[in-house]
Structures are given as structure tokens and as C-alpha cells.
Length: 489
Image (cartoon, rainbow, N blue to C red; front, side):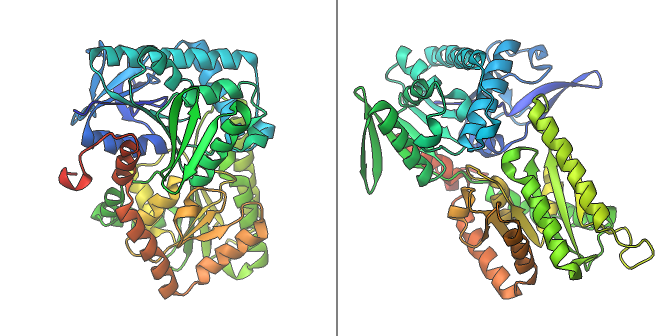
């Protein structure tokens, strides 16, 4: 076990009541998929909100419980939050204020004063739990994401010598957007208590530096190797480290007989014959993922390129999220309605060739890792059309799963992945005709070009995987971890 405490709002494993029994389930999301393999390798303690409906019923977790249940590798320490704190601090301030603000979808910002009180209470609850862990044994603390912007300051106030790094997973907006936040000063001061603040890209780190300069009059020094913010006698290092995926895990699974079988069964289940090309989208049902703009682009594609009727199907996997927020329920309903309208518009005659063909196959719900990798491997094209995205790990998961090296990745220039994956086609989600043309270009791209682009991206990800990312983040604050190559996978 390493002396490392990882802190996030989302827990990696939750206990839920399923048909009268308590079942431990691995949770979804890019943060968990990134950090869980890291903690399995290096050990430590993960502090997170106990979100499962049966989490409190699990015996033997006076302070923590070993996870994963089948092969324990690290400790999970749960934070218990009141419903009002979850509603105002998590669902409210974090997801209805900070999330749309950071993704520059300002018409979605829904501000209430009670939200800020809830956000403060949430961060105080996390601080109490982390400080309790630190009282038992000194450790370094690695905090994650926008739910916990006040936490660095709360920990440092009590234990100023604790080494703290904070990874901000989502974009960071510039001063012109950030000034909208009434508590901008408090949030910036909370984050600047960390010893290192890490962003997905250099542009987000630069935007943060601009904000602390403008709103706090902090001093920022930048040289070729580092950027340092000096504020009230404390130094905070700013770095950019693009989050990644477990490359070998995806690549090995893609080569398995299980995935080979799933690919064949998926084609039969969807009625997609061998000659039909497949496009793919995998997204949470979140307005920042640009799903409506993608659907409009697909409609434009079939309008202008009718030769692809019956020859190209777009498979959209939509993963439910935040169904307790009305704006998300309305968005989900609009997506469903639009998919139905497009399919009805381009429906082929029932007596013709490829009867039953649909331009869009829409699958709503969670899918197993093997099924997801089967989709990735069989897709001739994967389209990421985010209107703004910190990184977007779907792009990297697709590349890692493309063992045949024949698929094409098209990614929004407003997603962090576009800055790193230079073999991708870069699209503008606000230009639906341009996206439609990129779909056609991907489908008609010569095989040698497809292979060269994919091979280049796979080579990059094989050396810049999730372990390389974690090791780099921690070394920024002189936290040494076992080198990935020296530890069994």
C-alpha cells in the first residue's frame, strides 16, 4: 500500500440493492475508468461519496473496505452526505453551475444561493474524512475534479505540510466567462492552496493563470519547464497532463475470441449485413457531447449523399446520466425524438434490398466492457462531436481497441483529445455540413491512409497510457510511484 489518498466525488465501487440482494457494482465514467487501474497497481486509499443505495448496509466498513471485492488492492473510504448536501452541492452547484460554466454553455447555468452553501458543506464533509485518514497516517493527497474545489484549502488549513495535487478533469474557462461566477474568488483561493494544479491541456492551464491574475492579482511566473502561481506566500505549480486509458487492457480485449464473437452477434442483432459500413458514437446523455449537432450532421449526410442509403449505419450508444436533473431528462427526450424522425425520413421500402436498414441504430443504456470494445473494433468511423470537452476518453478507447488499424477517428476541435491525437480528422461541431463531409471523407479514405493515421495514434497511446499519466501527475509534486514496467499488470 502506498501512502497516497485519492479523493473524488464519484466512488469506484458502489453497493446497490438488486432484487432483494446487495450487489457490489463497478461504477461508470472516465474518472473511475482512469483511476481504478492506477490504484489497483500502486495501492492506497480512495475517499469518495457513498452513492450506492445499499452502501450503508455493508458490514465491516467501520472506516473503509478493501476493493475490488474479488481481488482487494486498495481501500475505499466512503463519505456520507446528507440528501440536502447532495442536492444543493453536487446536483446543484457542481452540476448546474460549475459544469455548464466550465463547458461554456452559459444558458444552462442555473444559479441558486443555496447551491453554494451546499457546495461548501460537501467540501467540509470530504475534508473531515480526509483529515481523519491523515491523522492515522501521513500521506500525500491527490484530489480530482470540480466537485472539490474548496478541499485543498480546507486540508492545508489544518495540516499545512500535507502535499496536495489537484487534477481538474473538465475545461477551465477564461476570465470573460469565469467572471460570471459570484464565488470566483473563493473557488480560486481554494484551489491555489494545492501544491500543484493539473489540467488536461496547456490552454486550460493558461486560462486558469489568466483568471488568478485578473481576479486575485496573483503573481504568475512562466518559464519553458513550469508555471508557478505565487499567492499570499504560497506557491502553486500549474501543469498540463492529458488523461489517458489502459491501452493494453483495451487492445488485448479487442483481440479476444469473446469480442470476435460479439462483433458477429451484434451485426446479426442489428440486422447490419457485412457490406454495410458502421459509424459509432459513445456518449453520456449530456448536452456538452454535441449529440443534437451530430444527429443534424447525419441528416445532412444522408440528404446530400443518398448513395449511402442501406450502405452506412451510425450506431449511437447513449449512456443515461443525471436523470434527476430536469434539463437532462428533456435533452434525452429530444435525442430520442430526433433519432426517430431521421430514421422515418430515410426509411427504405420494406421489399427492397437491405430491408430493415436504419440510418441510425440507437442504444440507450450501459453496455459491458466487452460489448463496448466490440463496437469500437467493428466501427469504420468513430465520431466525437463535443461542443467542449476536457479530454474525451472515448476517442482514446477507440484507438486502443482498433487492433485492425482500419478505422478512422473524427474528433471535435473543442475536445482536448484533438490536441493530442494528431492522426484524427478534426471537425467543428457547429458546422454540420463540414461534419457530414468528414463522415464521407472517413468512409472513402484509402486504406493505406487509414492505417497510417491509426498506427501513429496507437503508438502514441501505447507509451502515453493511464500509468504514464498518473506517474507524471504525481512526480510533478515529487511523489514517486512504482514504474509501470516493474509491476505486474
